[in-house]
Length: 170
Ligand SMILES: [Fe+2]
Image (tube, rainbow, N blue to C red):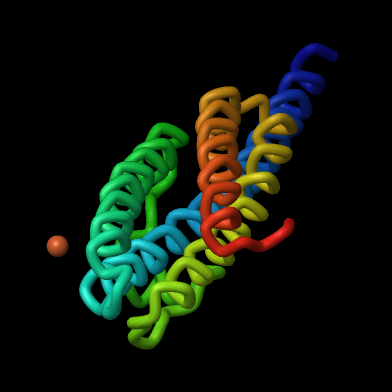
């Protein structure tokens, strides 16, 4: 009797483990999508920094640098979080282009258009971060949950600032 139950038990355990691994894989794929989106956003910010022209040059050249420097730190944190979850962060630009929800920009020299881009890109990033936050609760992944909360709070604040700069009512 015991001999019969043990293999069945083991079999169920294996199925359960495979299911958990599958769920984790698709969950981490969402975090990889966020990583890819930040990578494209980072390059868009560098382009804004290089190509800004006009009377707001000094103000925005510095602001874009501040933004891409912070984005670089965020990218590293997300990639290392993925590694902590025993998965592999995307690292090829060809993959970033496929998985990013943010598209590559053409050259933007106008200050208003540049800040409009940043405002919109941050709104897109917030959507993914809120999705991951919800999923992290289901997966009892407190580390990713805390990271998402920090990123969400930070971007909500800076988007209020960008919105004020653009005089938009959100
Ligand atoms: Fe520079």
